[in-house]
Amino acid sequence: MVKKFTKKALDNYKKIVVSELKRQLNKPGSDLEKSISARKITNKDGFAISMNEYGAFVNDGRRPGKFPPRQKIEDWINKKGIKPKTLKSGKTPTLRQLGFLIGRSIARSGIQPVRFFDVIDKIEPKMTKEIEAAYLKDLELELDKKIPKQKK
Image (cartoon, rainbow, N blue to C red; front, side, top):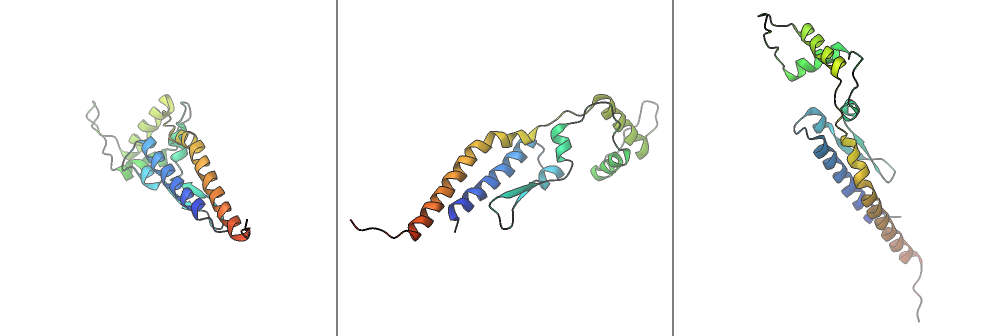
């Protein structure tokens, strides 16, 4: 069966979900925002959303208590080009020390969740109805082709 209307509705839904996730994230130009994308699932009706793996941690946040992996923090510092500020003592912390300070702050205070995945729950009911209507339209067209018209 040709699913012209269903495909169009799914493509529309795919674009809306991606744009709403990016809007809810509210971090324009960030690596996470740039990584959010959707692709059609091969040989199936549907699509998959993908993003950098740390997107789930940004969404869920992090509770205080556990010290995060310092190497990941140091990699993040290098990637962002963060330069440590000179402390009151007049010393400038090394990359390792800066990683420790940031990790300690995260372990003490945690990281607040962003909850940008929640937007999917808000738009899903409307989009489900639109996809359902499109599929029904495709089905009706297919049935019209298969069933001969009767003369009155």
